Image (cartoon, rainbow, N blue to C red; front, top):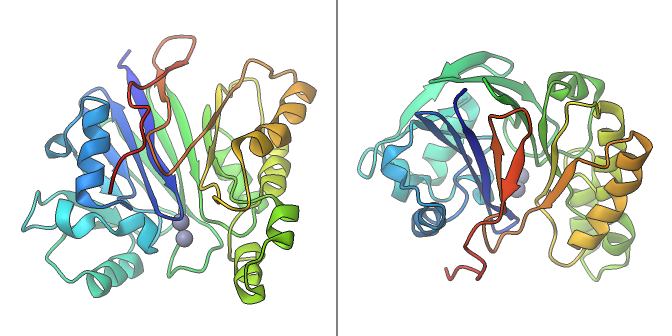
Length: 280
Ligand SMILES: [Zn+2]
Ligand SMILES: [Zn+2]
């Protein structure tokens, strides 16, 4: 079976990008750091952007698209960009350039090489936000970040995930007690804002099954969250489901997370060599 590697290159309000490799198929999910940063972070896992088969976009917020122009536009590497029509329009408006868009309808499934991409709508304050289930021969990855709340439809769409990337943006108490302006707090915890640790754990409780191997906490707020708080939300739920073997990975926006390797009966993850934060 083909080896599958999945690495979150970074995740947070300053930028988001992940790398998925399934045999010869190589994808980015979001391109929310500078082109230079994306190259550096790919280099840290011994990969180069020239070999990418495409970039899959979740939504048009800057922290998910800002590297596209200098990395993927036709004047640069000319990489295929997979997104829906409204998102493509916003990308072109925000960063005018010629792009090779591969448009699909929200809700549609399609293939990129050996990966089957299933898209679905998520509630967030961008033009047409998406979550994904990425099906590979070695297992499925649920990709769920930047969403204000979860729904039963979303749970159904990621129920087959073996690796579940889930937004764990903030701790509700820390956000409430933070010095942030009231309207910003309202935006974050609103129905179209960001998912709290508590909301993510409640959601995980409804979709966990014996086939889950990794839960990845993503898009952590620097001021209103910590890796320890995310773990403390998930651990009791994993225990209750007899899933203590599930590995919890917490992402950072400063450096790539551990690479998840899939392809044997047992999935495992390896520490990347990159440990120092990257300079901008
Ligand atoms: Zn974001
Ligand atoms: Zn967003």
